[in-house]
Image (cartoon, rainbow, N blue to C red; front, top):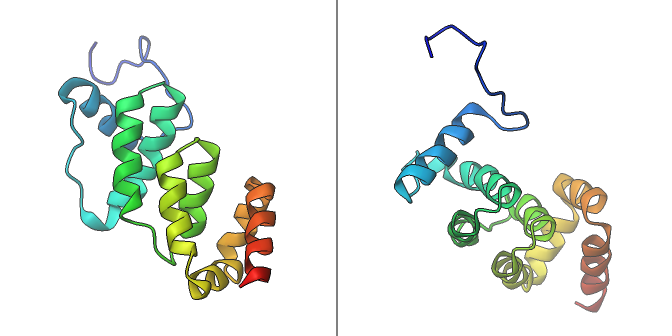
Length: 135
């Protein structure tokens, strides 16, 4: 196909171009492309969603393993939401370990991210509130 000719182009919705490039890289090389560390967690989040969507279990597993290392106060709400929505048991366990600290649990409950978590995964939010009452 000639560059600039979009007649035969395939449109991929709901995925950023960089994420699609990383997805294709994985398909052809069976490895993740090395990215800047500050963006690695965000890229892994997007790739996990894409891997789940397209049934790419190996990629999903790699992203899940990498995301376990990025669980912290700034990412916990987003990562826990992803773990719940995409059935990532290892990631859920990493989040649970992090939230085992009463200070971390309280920080999550007081964060803006908790509002998103509550809307996306109301049962998880309810369980976290119940957990906080026990601490």
